[in-house]
Length: 133
Figure: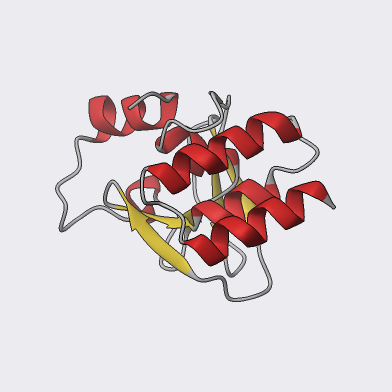
């Protein structure tokens, strides 16, 4: 797997599966990786973001390293676990990155994610439709 986030997590945090969650970022319960950070974690779309993007459902002001970027989200989002980290689904992450990553790269990443079993057929169809609209 590629990606600065994964390297950082494995080299600095060295998480144990039972302990791993966005809590390792000292953000708190309900926090999860989103957007480019999900793609980087899984080695999709050839991204290497400068910041680890973490979404939080409620206001938080923890003391964080400068490479962690918090985003407040107002709605409940369905999350999953990738590499032991709570994260936005690949489908939602691909759609969230529209406008920041070229559509062609996102479509390639979606095809790779489908091949790797990270997207269901219906999610892949939803992503393709969303990226082409």
